[in-house]
Image (cartoon, rainbow over all chains, first blue to last red):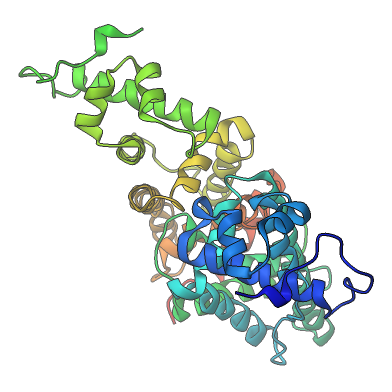
Length: 209
Length: 209
């Protein structure tokens, strides 16, 4: 249906510029991957499905992405390139709460959470998906660390606080319930997770011993 | 290889007694499921594989367990029936540390963690596996709550402390690294997780607001 964004077998010069035809193709392919994951999950995702829903020819997909695993990994890589920054509410308490509520927003509703859930599930089956998931989430938590850096600067957290442990600690109980105990999550649990970690920070329990 | 534990199409009276032939069959089937999961993962697990490795005839497996999903769910149900109890070191600090170290022991080594990891992965693909995983882990964490009950009785935790949130909170950062950020875990991380939750407990952050 989208012949206009289909690539030629040999990209012409200029096709790789940001926002150009290659970028549009990549985004269309990513969208088709996300739709497929949301609607059918990873085991059912095929190059044929992505070709049909992106309008990009199957031979182009195989040439540039190699396989379903490659398509999945690139969709995650593309997600890593977004401009997302962590909340900046003015206090550590507010920032930790906002971070926890973002997890509830992203996963608490089954429709919204279908694609990221499928990425997490795919990592159990595909080492390449696992590597892409690792890159995505370690980078995401790295971006969150500024929340703690700012708190230290404001005197809300002790110098030496392990920023990575703090921001992972806030999300962790929510992910545990989503994918291990498979219990529902909500705003109250987000608040609880943030409150517990904040107390730990204030007590110096996130300063390495 | 194990014809002696193969069931007849119609079980004779007495076969369902605990420790009897049915129990042995079930355990042999469970062992084959665990071996299959550890060696090949959930997507590759088949009734044929379980038949071959348990010595139980395929028609018996289909009749009693219905499908691979049924086999997987029953293996988890059987795991729930073990006699596991949480550590009792005499202090909340010691118990939380021991709980965290049990996660490292169970999952930190790829070989030891292969079967439980496969169960967690299967839940992304099979609603029945997800239900069995939910039952297993909610029961496991329920058993852990006594750690907090004892701490409250000893005066180490405030009255009203949410025991479930505490015991899930200790494991959560380790599971996050295992299956979301896909980073390694070790004893130092276990100590850190226990220390952070202990500080939260002592500050009253696990008493519902």
